[in-house]
Amino acid sequence: MDNEPWQKRAKRAGLTQKTLASLLGVSENTVSMQLRGKWATGTPQYVQFAILIWELSSQDTKDKMLDWAERQKPDKPE
Image (cartoon, rainbow, N blue to C red):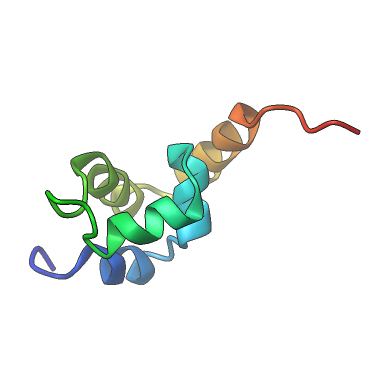
């Protein structure tokens, strides 16, 4: 598990790139590149931490995190 690529680890935990992007406040494209290790330093520590927290969280906690992330989005014009 510890040596498993972060992209596979996130997928195994049920964490999609779209959801991870929403939680981190970045684009899906950014998350995709980060999970594939396209950064010079590999997958950033904050992305690894988010995946780890997701893995360790109960469904109730995950729901609360998703609700929080949704509230952080700027209001869309009507």
